[in-house]
Every structure is written in C-alpha cells, then in structure tokens.
Length: 211
Ligand code: CO
Image 1: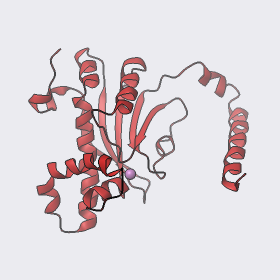
Image 2 (image 1 turned 60 degrees about the vertical axis):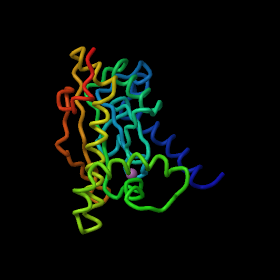
Image 3 (image 1 turned 180 degrees about the horizontal axis):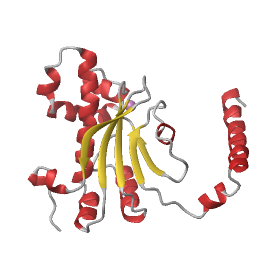
C-alpha cells in the first residue's frame, strides 16, 4: 500500500480512539441522526475544509462543495443537497464560502482552455460579464482577482435566493438566512461580505416567485 494511503487509515484509527476516550458516547450519539443548523456551499479546494475552519464538529454542518462554490440552478446535485437541507433537515443558515486564490475563478478570468471544465467555468465567466465594468476598471490584476472572488460569492448567494426551494421556504415563513463569506487561504480568516438575505424582496422583481 502506498504510504499516504496507509497513513490516513492509521490516522482514522487514532482519531476514533482519541475521540472515544474524550467522549465515550460520541459515535453512539451521531448514529442516532443529524440535525445540523447549517448548510455550507464551498469550493472543492483542499485548503478550504469546511468543518475545520469554522470549528464545527461532525453533525453540525451539511456540506456541498464544487469547483468555485457555484450555485448552478440546473445542477441536480446542488439542488438535491439544498432541498434535503432545507426541507428535511430544516437548516436555518446557508453559507456560500468563496476563497481568495480560487483556481476556478482565476481560470474564468483568462482565456485558456483547460478541457471539459471550461463548461463549468463558463458559469463563472457569466459573473464576470455581469460585473465587467467594475472588474475591468481595476488595473491591479491581483486586486481584480480578489474582487472577482467576492462578486462571485455575492452572485451565488443571489442564485440561491432565486431557487424555488429557498423561496418556497420563505413563503412558508420558515426561517432561512443566506450568507456570503470569503476565506483567506493565506490568513485562515473568514470575512463576512455583507450579503445576508432572508426574504425574496431583495431580488430583481422578475425572479420573485408567487405561490
Ligand atoms: Co476554489
């Protein structure tokens, strides 16, 4: 067996031993079920592990991750996670977490073809086009990249709010708060972007659903 693979299996044994030593009922309790208050939509980037950076224990956060923390309204995977989180688990908060230095966002700023992923990156390019006036006006490339990461989070939070799942929950007066944050891979710090939505009145009228 390759060393890294062997190491992670051993790490798991150690983790189970240590966890059980500190809290003998830990796994028994988790086996009863889950009631996480939070759905996390983050980037697949290995440097942004959801639970670890927010100090959440197993059972505390329902997680969906993809390249560049995208909310694509026709993505059955995302919609299934969102539907289960909102309608079955009844999470109260959904966080979209972007991160500085995101490879997906960087690729979307450029023109190079990377392969199949170009079609996923396309969704991020649409965000650029939506904000091209602001972004093109930023001369410093790093600053423009950082701002693009932030604007992408903002758009994904808006796209969450536009889903029938979220608007239906709001229509039933189910408390559901959407938040946009950005993580600094070089600092470890999560920054609130001031995008906090809890009803559909902030959406452009054309997206507001009546039930
Ligand atoms: Co990323």
